[in-house]
Image (cartoon, rainbow, N blue to C red; front, side, top):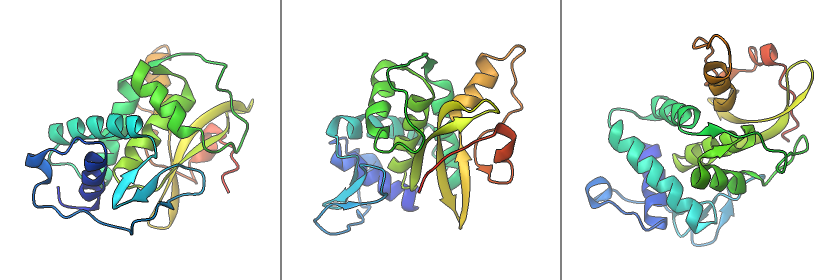
Length: 212
C-alpha cells in the first residue's frame, strides 16, 4: 500500500523500532522538520524527526505492532476500507469492563493515550478505552482523529467515541456501541453500523459533545 496511510504507518513502525524491511524498504518517510508539532489540540500525537508518535514509546510500539498485523492480513485495503478494518478490530478484539475510575467530564481532553494503553495491555475497558484504541490506531494510519468525551442517549449517559473530518464533513466512529449491540443486546443486533456516522444521523443516538 503506497498511499499516505502506509507512509504514516511506516513512520510509526520506525519510531517504535519495528521496521519490517519487507514492508518498508524503498519507501521514503515523510518529514515535517526536526521539532515536534502538535497535530490536534487535544492529543499527544506529534511529528518528531519525521515520525508519527504519541509521545509514549510503549504506546507507539503497541500501535505499530497491531497495525503491522492488520495491514499484512489485509494487503488490499487502504483509505476508508483500511479504517473500517481498524474499527472492526477495536469492536471485536476487546472485552467490555465497566469502570468508574476513568469517568470524564464532557469536553475533557488529553485522556486518549492513557486509556488506549490500558486497552492494548489489558484487553478490557469501557467506552473511553474503546474510543481511545480506535483513536490511537486510526491516528497511526494518518487520520486526524479526535477522541470525544460527551454523553449519549436521551438520559445523557457519559460516553466516549471518535470524530474524523473527511472531505470537509464530520463523522462519528463508535466501535464500543456497535460492539454492545452485538454482544449485550438480546437478541444481538448486527444491523447497527456505527462506522462513519454522519451528523445528520447522529441524532438517533442523542450524542452531545463539546469538542472545540
